[in-house]
Image (cartoon, rainbow, N blue to C red; front, side, top):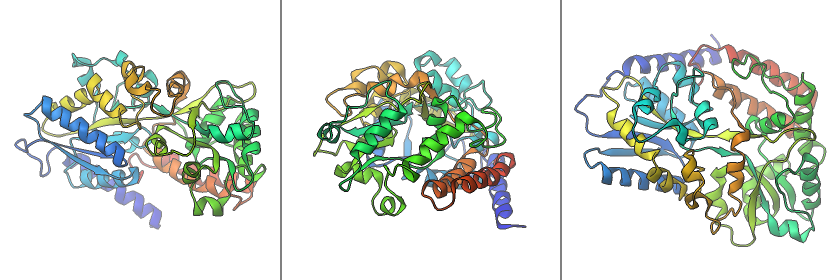
Length: 430
């Protein structure tokens, strides 16, 4: 058996064991309190601690143990281990691009019935796009999304002004973006920084009315080269590096990340989600703001959803306290607390449209762009192996983006190598 197949078998067995064991394991009905596992940087974790403190003040009968990790990869490892050991957390926060493997194994207690019975929350309170990303079966909610960020363009307004380049605005085009990037490149500076990943490429494909999988609902293959609209978007994205050289080359990106360059004032534009804001707020040497993604010629506005949700582990003795915590976190007070961290675009629409999020005194001044993007947000497929498909795609796309392999050979190789991952057994995503 190959190393890959042994790995898949071990992960599948671990998850199956976890689902079978999460009806109790070492957990008992007498266990005090609930455990919450989530990821985030220091600012985020501080926000979650404030949230938990507010919850326990309101519900002193419920003890909450917050168990944070630094990254989503660490979170996935923690969850896989805890499910395999029969001791999953009561609540965990997970991105929609990663929850599929647990949902496929029925390791998550669906929240739909809890939300239906709730007198404090209603589906109409939240972003429809964020909710739909967590309907694993296409109908019932598996987890409840707490944010609805999108990919945007952060830009150095002072650098634009110094170069005489018009500031980005709604409706600007790919040509406008490229023209600005070219004008801003030179003298040790680059026009733009973007991660070569499917999550960064996807909005450009959608804006050009293309698709990057054969079936968004039941994908069996990537389709980066066949459809003309998709291929045009792929080439435009790759050309930023390979032809126009307006993004840092491989060696320079390795020595200093695009985010670090933007912080230092040597990068004109930086593509990221709301997650970057707490760090960008440390800038004091220049004025920066956020703009929507440029639109393809003759295309449509598009961006990719970035959303994390509160999930409950299946099979625990009861979920009452776990749901009480989620209900509080998704209420107005809980969403306002997290909005204060700067990192979160609240999925609760009344909070997202309030000064708690839109405060113009706190950069970016144009936070409205995240809300304007909501009707145009799309999600990647939610399947049991999607996170593995995405991880392998990103690694191979990077090879093409930085010219380590030829464009045609690289894209063909990417599609061929990734195709078998779509048909792995449910839960075999490690």
